[in-house]
Image (cartoon, rainbow, N blue to C red; front, side):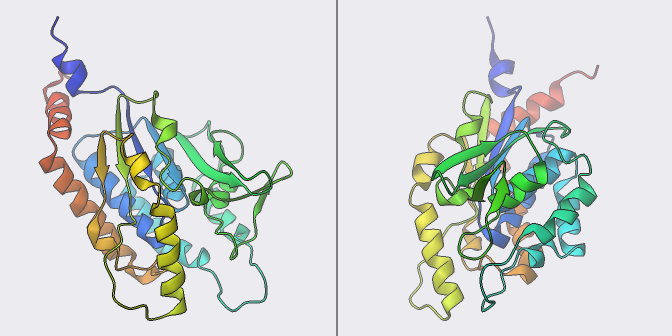
Length: 273
């Protein structure tokens, strides 16, 4: 029996989106490149910045539309910490923006399945959200400890999922025929650190990247733009540049990966209903 079409055109394609602050805008570029070539996702998992992208794209917004929404509503600046402020600040003031564009505020109402990675701070364990109030799960996943107050959900305190898993591929395993991983935290070699913010950024990225290879091996395809290492996680003014880096890397992967070429060709050859 010839199974070429089944192998080359998976029915369920999943994508895992890493955390990485503003660098996570690159995921939007990667996904837009894929969508432009006819690749659709059945399941998206994400943590932190990846959780934001997952939620908006799963609602049906094109990734390039999400970039516009983020820029016009200054979402990235809302999520930027106020260094020097007295005590922790709340991330909940960004809640209105999610409800504005995803008014049903539920996982079940989304057009695509998503999984949001968080950490239960009290119980010190990784928690994947697939139901409940969408905005709280997304903001909890973005809640960087030491900067933002934890998000309370059902009497539990939740923070950034990147603490324990910054590349949440596992929710896709067994649920997808093909798994794509988009990681935005490739670190270049540096010879000097110029600021406290840069020091914190690099130390954090070294920590979250420590288990990256373990997650990469679960992916069929890994997309990791190398040009992002020079951007800090709070470089909000560079969102457009970061998006284009992701888009170009997405195109490069499509053009250089036979699995993706086969999927695209199989979709083109599929007769219209």
